Length: 150
Image (tube, rainbow, N blue to C red):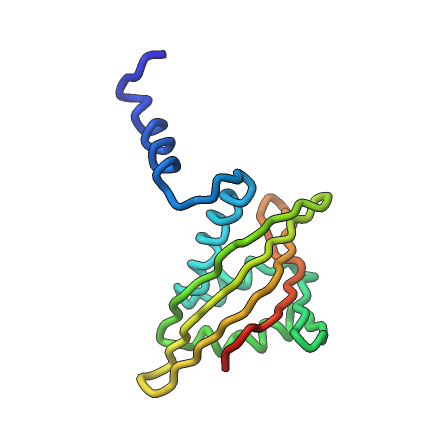
């Protein structure tokens, strides 16, 4: 194989992956990268981008077992996207493939700053169920299990 100018980009990707903090499990690494992209809609305080990740039939299961449809999920989360900044993120711990669904277990920690004196910290553990719809990955169900926060 000739390692010319045109192959440098490929080798750089391989070296970057080798040196990264990505998990060794390819499926876990794939979903870790997917979550990094997904999280940009949150840290970018972009409600429209975040909304695009939710399937039309998406449901959110709250810690008390209440099931919330997509429209009411958006209503409940919309105020967070009025913040001046959102920092933090989600860490993917496990991925299970179940037919055409992927169940992604994660923990998350966010700091939502509305003003100097109005800062909300959120910590949760949960599972997102993802499905490819029309060529794009979307969440069809989220099951939250808060560990702490206010």
